[in-house]
Amino acid sequence: MFNLNPLQAAFLAVCASILLAAPLAVAQDRDSQEISAYVLTDAGLAKYKQAAKNLAALPTPPSDGCDDDDGTDSQSLDEVSARFNATPGVRSAIQSAGMTTREYVVFTFSLFQNGLAAWALSQPGGKLPAGTSKANVDFYNRHAAELQQLEALTQDDDCNADETEDEPEPEE
Image 1 (cartoon, rainbow, N blue to C red):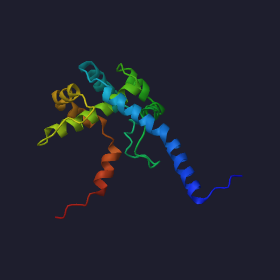
Image 2: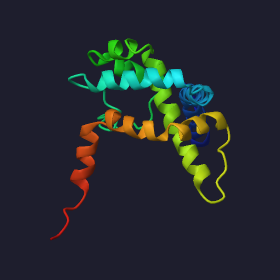
Image 3: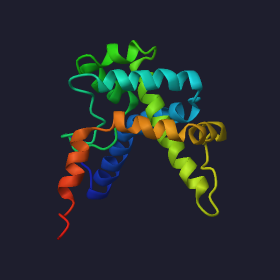
């Protein structure tokens, strides 16, 4: 056995935790880069809209993750895609619109990211966040009305119910 003093043991514990966390950080960085590099297009939006309509028609639409029981907020693109693929009918609903499940997930996250960037730019003194494509933000702004209509299709009713349950009842 090794004979370590408490300082050496603590140092090794910190090193081990860094090494164990590194693959997760690399995966998240890779996902962030993929989302940032994704180019939003009219053709992609047409497919996305059809996929959203197909998904909304399913008896059990995929969850957007608001009701995760595992307590984790952060999931990789692979994990979200796998969860969607595990829900009956989701893969075929998305593929019949001409997208892969992963592309649907990346498109969704890209819309979210560029929507936040569009909001940031609209604020007094707002600047384009680093690594954000101005073309994607412009795309988001051009299609804001369409995207707002799509939002109703892609929201999880369970999430909305949870939000309203937490709100106090108005007093009469």
